[in-house]
Image (cartoon, rainbow, N blue to C red; front, side, top):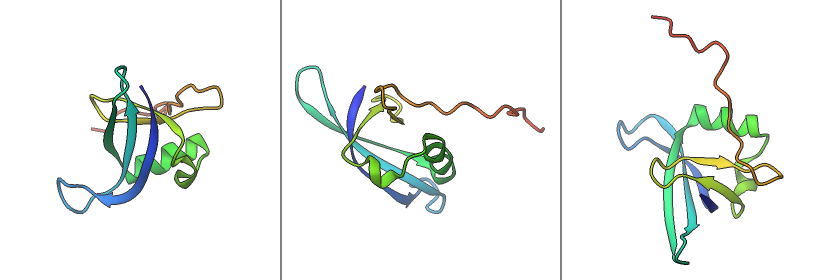
Length: 97
C-alpha cells in the first residue's frame, strides 16, 4: 500500500533496550479517504544495507511516497517508476550450524 514517509530516526529496540534500530512513521490514505499513521522498524544493520542498496539517504525520503504493509509494518522505497525496491537475499544465505 502506498504511503507518505513522515519520519525516520534511530532508536533502540523496545524488547531489549539496547539493540540499535531505525524507526519509521508513515501516513496511509485508506480506501474510504481516511488517513492512518503506521509505524515500524528495521534493525540498524538491515536499514544501512537496504538504503545503501536503494542508493538513497533517509533524510531525502521524508515526505516522499513509499510502500508499506499494514499487517507486518515494513516499508519499501519506490524506484523512479513507482515500483517497490526489494533487496535480494544474499547469495550465500546457508546456515552455518
